[in-house]
Length: 194
Image (cartoon, rainbow, N blue to C red; front, side, top):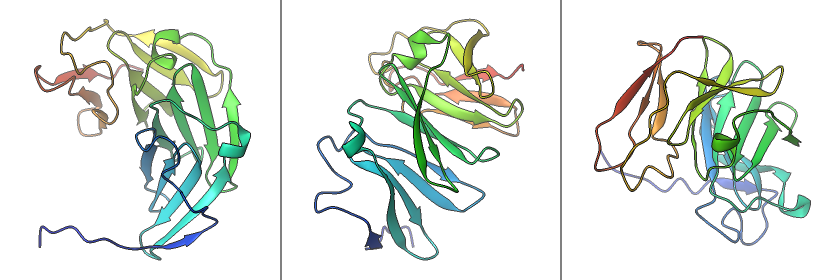
């Protein structure tokens, strides 16, 4: 019908002001093809939306752990059953099947990890996370927790390329990543090469 509908899901474990919290723009979310659920990180907590049951559940209270206040981007890693969130010098990892929260210490990739709202995508070819924040493309090895620069750096001149959010995506049919740097520049494709 091409119309939006407010689902008004049943809420579990929510406080009065959740998930909005202090900064409503500091969200990171992604869809999990295994569970068919959407996961969301806000300044207040880590949540799960179940479309089939129309339920919205807080899994982890991160506000009490110091919260997260920056413009973050997150991605589900379906094979490992984790959600990885990156920005402002922090790599946060949440367990999906057994809700948990951990800050990872990673090596390399300071430009990506330190950025606000970097582009992130799961790479099924390497079972890793690949990201871009207006410079080098970085691949995170989830076993060693090391970021490695791959390919030729690309720096956009578009004024909106400083925050990528969901404009970086993996294209399975092409085994490549697509980025739309902003409204004033052409989309770019980064060919995957593990």
